[in-house]
Length: 140
Picture 1 (cartoon, one colour):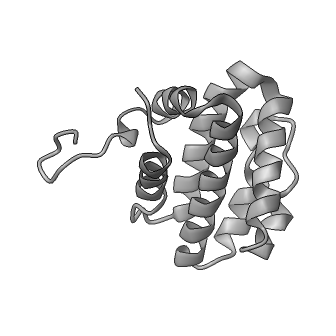
Picture 2: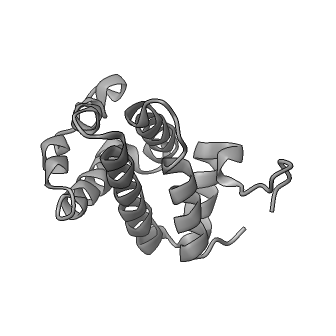
């Protein structure tokens, strides 16, 4: 399965703009699921490097994300600083920042390992959530 930049972008936009009651919870869930897949491949330090670079790049648009730039060594609290930063923002701001951060991360990942492998990792991490569906729930 190959995924183009625009399809990956659409997938990330769809996943980060769902109208969950708590956009911070939604974002952290996506990050935790992705981290589980990637850490198994690139290790904690590899994941952390990509994540911190994504935070650095995204903080140009959302300076308050810079406060999230420390990652706890414990995987259970890896995204605590991101959660705190997102919870301090309006729901709309949190969603926009989450979307930009995830797009930046997946862009970096795809530039390093290619679109096909990135697509497989995202599909493994997010499962059926990655597939576009029509009004009746059929994959498109």
